[in-house]
Length: 122
Ligand SMILES: *[C@@H]1O[C@H](CO)[C@@H](O)[C@H](O)[C@H]1NC(C)=O
Image (cartoon, rainbow, N blue to C red; front, side, top):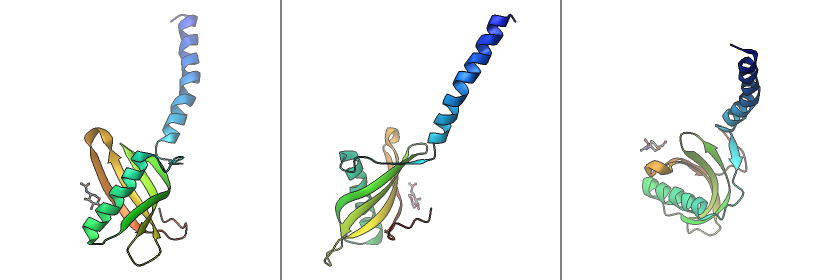
């Protein structure tokens, strides 16, 4: 190999490694959703409440997505705080996790529980 090729190989290593490392760091981390009124985010929130109602024979009424985060994992995990009302007066916040693989039209409610004043267990 001549020096030029060795130089180019080293250069591409130096340039590409940090790019690769930062892309890898993004996968698996949670990043905040900036627009909780985004129709797709709202749809995920509605889906979470309706799935919870279906599975638990509950009658919660979805109101809004209060806040949320997403995580890239062979698709996207949505961790949303949604406000919903059970008909008994004031609405409550719930934390829902929905896993979506849009290219397969796959969605699943992984977890749905009352929001614990900002405490998180996972
Ligand atoms: C959806 O999530 C629930 C709760 O984690 C799980 O029991 C169920 O098997 C999942 N369904 C599918 C189709 O992945």
